[in-house]
Image (tube, rainbow, N blue to C red; front, side, top):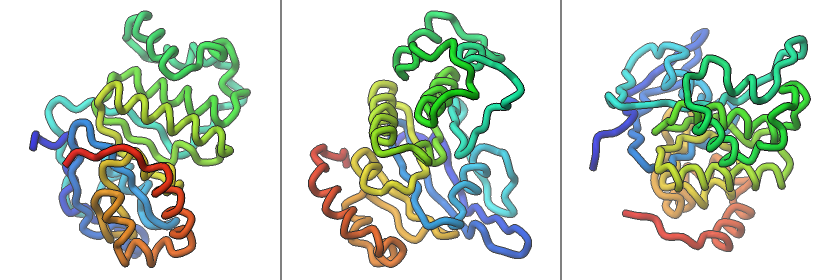
Amino acid sequence: MTEALITADNISLNYQGKNILDSVSFRLHQGEFITLIGPNGAGKSSLIKVLLGLINQDSGKVIYSNNIRLGYTPQTFSPNPFIPISVIDFLSLDQKVETVFINEIIELTGIEGILDSPLKKLSGGELQKVLLARALLNKPNVLILDEPAQNLDIDGQMQLYKLIQDIHQKNNCAVLMVSHDLHRVMKESTQVLCLYHHICCQGHPESILKDTQFNDLFADQISELMTTYEHHHNHQHEH
């Protein structure tokens, strides 16, 4: 297999005496779609921040390939209500990319109709698309998405996941996505990591569904997940 774009090697993190991450290791390769799942407080967002270099781990290391280009959308983003910045101005901030490329990203994410809208007046779904567009302006080969569909209604979630799927397939970028919405993300994932401070289990969605630790953590969602996943899962994974 080719060199990993990101390698997490025994990452451990403590905060105020609590073990947030415990010897977490995995690799993300070109074209992979890894979904990171786990209960609230499992350390998912902390792991993302370590991978991005936003916080320092206590031990272990993160290894990046030489050609890595990161795109990132945070779990929460609140535009400053006192700064009347439009969508197009937000996309253009500190960017040294050609107008033609910006227009391609605008078309890809479907935000042509809101370019002149104030950022602070966007709906949740619109804002997520704008954040995704902004992340794509870096021409990433790794896209890191922290709960991108949080607080969206069902239609908004489906639209956003479809958009992420299209971007993954069109650009062949690696995607690492944190999500609670199990039955939707399973369809696209090439690998699922189940985190509860340490990696409880990992593998293709089919194998994760049969894992006892996964079932213990997500017992309340399993029956719905199994029904929806088996009904919708109609593509083949590459092995």
